[in-house]
Picture 1 (cartoon, protein in one colour):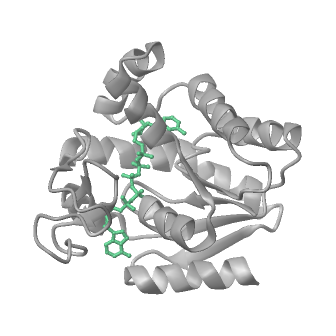
Picture 2: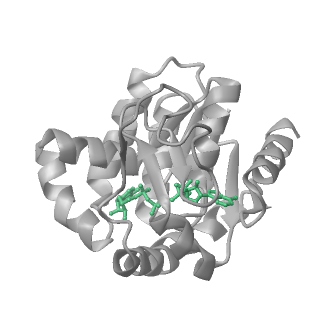
Length: 215
Ligand code: AP5
C-alpha cells in the first residue's frame, strides 16, 4: 500500500508515519528528513536547500522529486511507502504520479490530518528527537518514559530543528496554505482522500488511520 500523509507543519505526519513503519513494516519517505540529511552531509543538494529551509520556504520541485525517486528505487518493490511532506505542490503531485507509474506502484490513499493551525506552533516549538535513532518526542505531549533517555535506543542525546521557531513556522504554514493545500482537490477528484481529526490524541489519530487503511 502506498499512502500520502498530508497536513501543515506539526500536524503529526512524522509521528504517525513512524507508528505505521513500526506496525506494518512500511517505509517512511520524508523529504524533510532527506533534505536535513543532505544539509548535514554538506552535499550539493544540502548546500542549496539549507538557507531555503531556514527561511521556511519550499526547496525546488526537481530536487525533492529526484530524492523520492532514489528512495523508492532503494526499497523492495513490495514494501509500502508513506509519503511524509511530499508532494507539496501541484508539480510535485504530477511528478509523483509519473514516479509511481514508472515503478509499477499506485497511490492508494491520501490521508489528510485536519488541524487547528493556532495549536501547531506549540506542538512544533515543543518537539525534539533522539539524536541517535530519530524517535520523536514533545516537551508536553510525549516525553521519554525515563527522563533524558530515549525509549527506543537508550541514547541520552536529543536535538531540536533549527526551523522550529515561531517565525519560521508561520512562514511554513503560509507556504502550506498557498502551495500544498491546493493539491487536495486533485486527489479528492480521484476519490482517495480520507480526513482524520489531527487534533485528537495521538493514539486516536493512529486508530483512525489504521481504520482507513484496513477499509
Ligand atoms: P518537513 O520536515 O516536512 O516539515 P513540515 O512539513 O513542516 O512538518 P513537520 O515535520 O514540522 O511536522 P509533522 O506534521 O511531521 O509533525 P510531527 O509529527 O513532528 O519540512 C521541513 C522543510 O523542508 C520545509 O519547510 C521545506 O523547506 C523543506 N521541504 C521538505 N519537503 C519538501 C518538499 N516536498 N518540497 C519542497 N520543500 C520541502 O508533530 C509535531 C509535534 O507534535 C511532535 O512533537 C509530536 O510529538 C506532537 N504531536 C503529533 N501529533 C500529536 C497529537 N495528535 N497530539 C499532540 N501532540 C502531537
